Image (cartoon, rainbow, N blue to C red; front, side, top):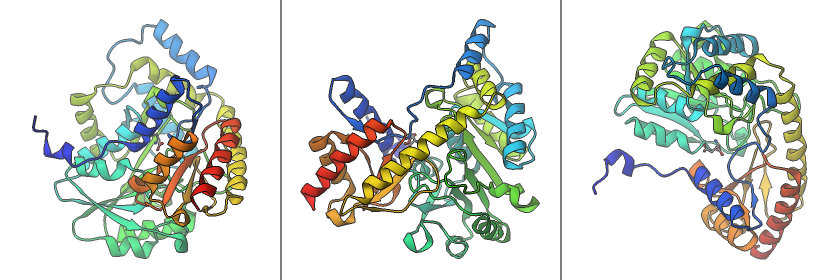
Length: 388
Ligand code: GLU
């Protein structure tokens, strides 16, 4: 059967594929240490689950408005005001099936054939594929250690052409964990405004930051940048709600109406009773978020200390998210070989850097328990000592 050209031009999601493989191997009784998908190992907090259960009992089992339950759109607008200093109303919010779906809807609503979208590398592997699905052209701007793996204002400026429509900013970043400072964001915002392009700020890791770094939303830096900013966020990482599939876009009303129309013809509303769990997440006690953040902070330190003692591997200290992006260049293995041999020989699942735009790296997720981290790092050390 001849498939559509658009689908033959994209790659399956490696993060999902490796995570599913690791889970299947564990189910078969194999002792796998999985550092694969960025999926917090904590259960969803009890009050969030209770709110969804109550919504089920109250009959919230029917179709809802395609753009989301009005109470949830309102709660998200309040959250963006309270936490991010962004002045949105409920009409500026679209509730989606997870952060990934927000970004996909955005690309489909915004990108015309041939429009260029600037993506700093390393990048989350779904960004370029979504741009391609929408008919756009991903323009990858490499970054390295000299700028702390961040795109500079000059590099952004140099990458802009008359065809540039959008710049994808992800801070804290998956896979590198870098967090842009206010000053860096101000410089990027100036370029975005001066060159009259748009920015989507993927803030899914906003709550997972360390050592007192400040999380700034680029849209909060002034009226002109606010008009050019689209926010993408969701509940998966901060509230350990990966399987719930609830995310959102915040943007000027015209774009939200367009993306809602798309959603109305594709998925309709997000699971109605699940949205009531999301309301409880935003309006309930936020201690659960901080408890998980502190656990991630401990794990990050353990993994950094362990990596420090493995000759041949190097990494930058991440300020946010729950990933370590490890340079494997000294092993002389490409990232796919490294990860497949590591899984085969030591039963450790990690994600190759290739689909993130960095074939000399692997990504280790530490959204897992300390026992797995200790055991997995022992095995990683053994693997590296055998191949260096
Ligand atoms: N975003 C997470 C990750 O990068 C989950 C998997 C995915 O959606 O790619 O691991």
